[in-house]
Image 1 (cartoon, helix red, strand yellow):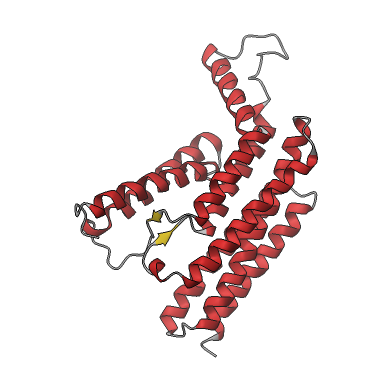
Image 2 (cartoon, rainbow, N blue to C red):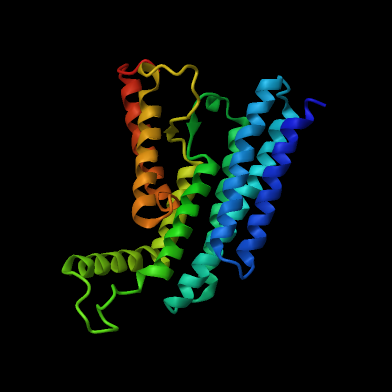
Length: 274
């Protein structure tokens, strides 16, 4: 009976992935599909925790976990990006079949999971970007996309519609910079480049820092604490200025890459203890 508890969390993860796919293809906002992926990540975190706590780790649980992750962190994000890219292509008068480029994320995610299952080097660190991290990146991109649709094309009050100079020059400048940034970010070419880049990152052999604490001492976990503190700070800034922490996720992911590269460089030169 103890062995069923971690598997129940794994199945909850799988159900969240299925619900995310459903809402991505419905007329409901894409943000709802993101929330189910986040819920799946929560269940994915605790299935391993309870397996270790109850000492019921086994090959069956490992395979179930990978299969559930393939749906929640592989297929579901791929479908969200497919919908987003199709809409972006339509707005930019590109052919809708461009959206099928999002399936590359699904292929890379499942390849990454299969590689992880047989790679003994990834017991206490990662090789390539983990699939949940890739899913978090695209959750952030979907929120940026939704933010752009809601606010990116809306000038400050009095800027255009009313002809009244309610907006300061800094408001106008910020609006222009923000609009230009979002227009470039959500061009079909930009999204396709990100898809290819994230896919290659997942299947690469780049050593990535794992948030696995053997102890909580600062000396041996400086890079981990730096990543956590930076992520929390960026999330706080995003919440204060944009009312959602999710748009900080793409920045946190690239910060994760930089910290991992720096950590491994120092580790090779024997300048960090772990």
